Length: 271
Figure 1 (cartoon, rainbow, N blue to C red):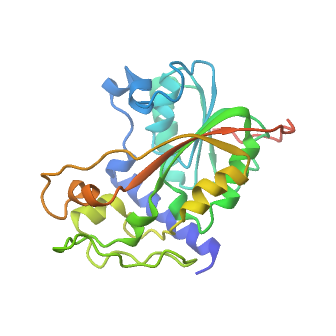
Figure 2 (cartoon, rainbow, N blue to C red; figure 1 turned 45 degrees about the vertical axis):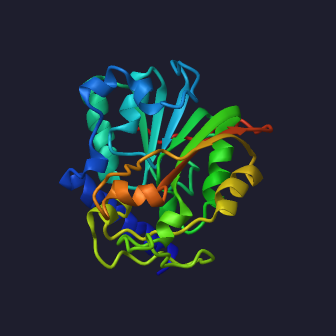
Figure 3 (cartoon, one colour; figure 1 turned 90 degrees about the vertical axis):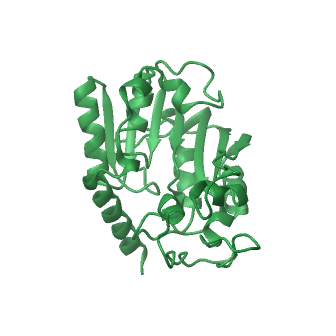
């Protein structure tokens, strides 16, 4: 399958998820919007206030991320491949009176955004949907101002390699680490698999040298790294929390842009 076909498949998956009200496509609650920074920044990486900051929510449509950062006082731009996901952002912005800009494009092509435009780039789990993170990181580096923050979350390589059924020896490694082909879908969409893999999506494993090395080569320095805790030792066998006890599903990285950039501003597509 070529790259355009991969993008189209993943776009249709998220269009379908948005239209069906999937849990990943639900806007923030009233209670969450009353305390947005405590929801999005439990690690304290954003410094206590983002009022007036220019924030890019990258591959983050669905109405949740954009509304939380807007509620915290940021000037928000949200980018997503899925038009249906972006429609949720438009709806929330209209209902709440948030000023928000949306752009439908792939995370690999941010040509509709200006150099050094953003103070903060927020990137939830989504790099698994592209075969290489290098063009993504290059574009993020271009649109992030020197000194700006890039906070991204990724599926850990081991989580994409491992199976979803626990044996007496734990969870087996089923897929190779060194690969440039998509990870096969789970044989059975168990409760754990449904939490970790989007049904029908085409996903790729990115090695640690791609993630950490790629960020550094793109002009970022790593300031912190955490593995969000989802493990529960007494969880039922083969559940999401049980698997997370053996295999951390995600990694979150705080990186800061170094160097200098031009400030040429192309035409911006607005909602």
